[in-house]
Length: 337
Image 1 (cartoon, one colour):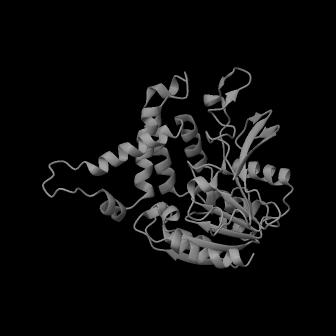
Image 2 (spheres, one colour; image 1 turned 90 degrees about the vertical axis):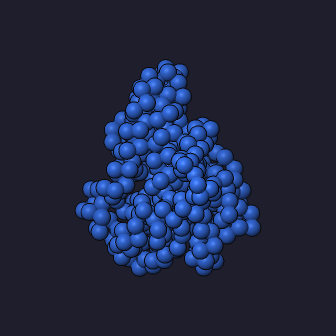
């Protein structure tokens, strides 16, 4: 995948505020004449899809980057290139920190549409989104119903649930409990809080069975369980080592709460009735963030949508791990483009 950067502006944010110029980083495959497959990334991923979905995306893979024109945009608020709270404010030469405008899912889609227009793409043959990437894909399918021809929505919903909103707030609280977060000296502020937030988030991404399978103690006579605790600490450290800062994470968790395709559209059902894309919806039977009941209800409101369900011991993260099952569902759709 090839990295690009678009400078555009002024950019007005849905919740208020604007930037004279916004930077939007995105990746594309080198092939430009093939069918367009646009992938929306999840919370802490980036626009280099081969980096985080290598089993499905890349040369010779299901989503073949030598056959299809694959595009992915790094969302505003991410620390991986697009403008966000960790970006340098040109008026001060320092990061924006809390001066950056609040971001919504619609702002993320607005950024993708700017890239679409910059690339001269008139229609997206297949739009794929999982989790918060699914938020974007669904919002985009409603915003530009004549542009999105086909969509695959994996482990997602049309509106943030109270359950998910509560989890996002718990993670924001963890970051806020680290007082260095408010010092705004540098991008290391809030690192300990970020580690805690990531550990909390991971529990919601996985499942009881997944932890039992991978983090059970080896020794029957263990006095204090340690493996799962060590794994939680490791995941927090790992995110920090990936140069993900607490300010970006806080802003993106805030954006989760903005997700509601029905806002100013007469409600969720009315909004979903506007979708024209041939839509495939995929739920994960052990997903605690997006229970299959919620995903099925969404599918029933999208005209002509089909519903599929995959099994996994790993909860929500099944969308990153159950590649065989996903391939079985997605291959016929890819082949029919």
